[in-house]
Image (cartoon, rainbow, N blue to C red):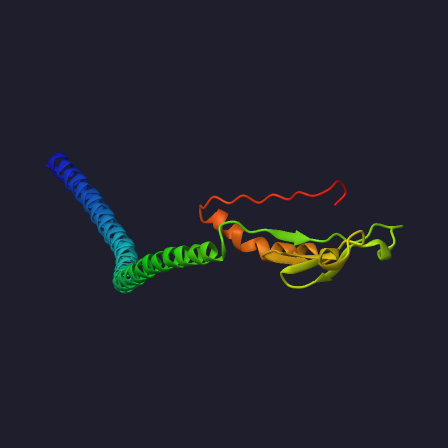
Length: 218
């Protein structure tokens, strides 16, 4: 009996020890599970915060892009309106320019018609003045010559009188008539002014011949 009771006590002590070990293990497991749960909750909380920050940033980027898109739409509408106004303005200017060019073309046609008529009338006047014209120009004395030796007695607009000392009576003076008589003091400009109408006839397409002749040195 003693032996049995001793064994029973030993068994009961061992059982009590096993129960304590089991309780400790269970407590440890429960504590680690609690720690794991709290750590998981903390990680979940951190993930939630990070996800919320990312969502807010993405929302801010989306809002900013939407704002830029609206601004670009507004600018595009303004540009389209400006282009429409410019197109209308250019179209009006082109229409006005076309009308102006049409008026200029009509005026140019009228000008050419008047110019042609003026040219014909001008050359008719030149024909009325004579198809053949003769001019006389008296040269001035050269250095060293005496003016008393001249034979020119009198010069008018179209008449020149020549004295002939070797003859007497009516034959001592002869008069000659030309279209124009230029005296010794006449300049090159004065001679050209009287022949300029003929030169204009040349430019109008008419045949004109101008030549000069006289003694050597004249």
